Image (cartoon, rainbow, N blue to C red):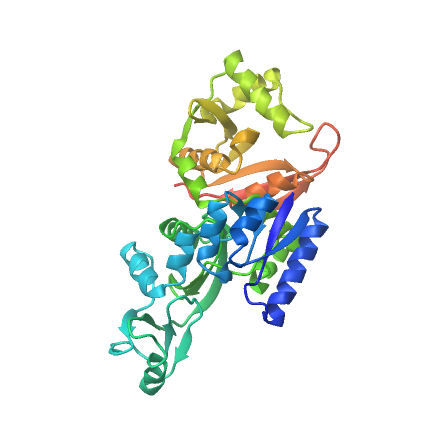
Length: 410
């Protein structure tokens, strides 16, 4: 895959930016990708049209206009889109939106340079426009000094500091990565991602006392964030797996409208429909591809939850799940190449989870070939965690990775 790595706009970029750039390029090349570098300047659009990369990999800290330029060039990219960046770096707008949606937040007030009145308790944290890193404010004099640095019409956010255990979580594609067992905090992450229409990697910080309180959101975290790497390492992942996942999830804001066109319906065991599924199987798997008789046998076990996704009348993908007394077991899923990266797999999985929840089932499991990196990345993005290795699972003696996700239920 040809990947365009955007260089910092400022030629005097600090050593940290340069180190990040070198490390990302090295990792991408180790994964076998062709990497070209392009500067974030007035020629960016022309360069993207000329180079025509498959994906643009960039640091979203480079500015809000960059994703808009990439969108116009019709190239997929990692990181957040323009709307998410705009909301996620304007806390004075973001916090009232989250509060109105019922997201638990610490006490806060909106202030201006000329009016810093509030009824909050020190110490506080002050967030300025276009920044997710706040300044600690110890008293009224410190607040007055910081307000003098603000612009005349700038809205600033004052937030009370909350005591408790700090918990950092990451999300990608509106799904928590490496989610904790507490379903409440995972639900908050999903709801917040939906509100800000997050698509790329997002970092959440909660303070946990009796209940979780959201205290910080970073919509442009580094893919080499120390805490992200620590959490990834805890499930056996390293930098290469994280970059694979980011690339797999690269997209465009304009892709989001496709989800509304996805229709989920029960699978028909008729030969004409199974033939379409076989075509998808053959295009998706070099080995283990189901044929018509395989689908008939699996359908006997999964008839309650065998579904297909359609886009404009065409079958885009399918998922077959067996309902067991204590869990759901996903037998097989595949998406046609022409409809990939359009959230077809995500739509199939969300429908499946909703049905399992209706039946009071609290967990879902699946097996994926251990060497199937794309499949493993997808299921991790859906919130699954590896449980164990199953030897000799496939006909050729290959190992399978058992993965599990807790989904609630009753």
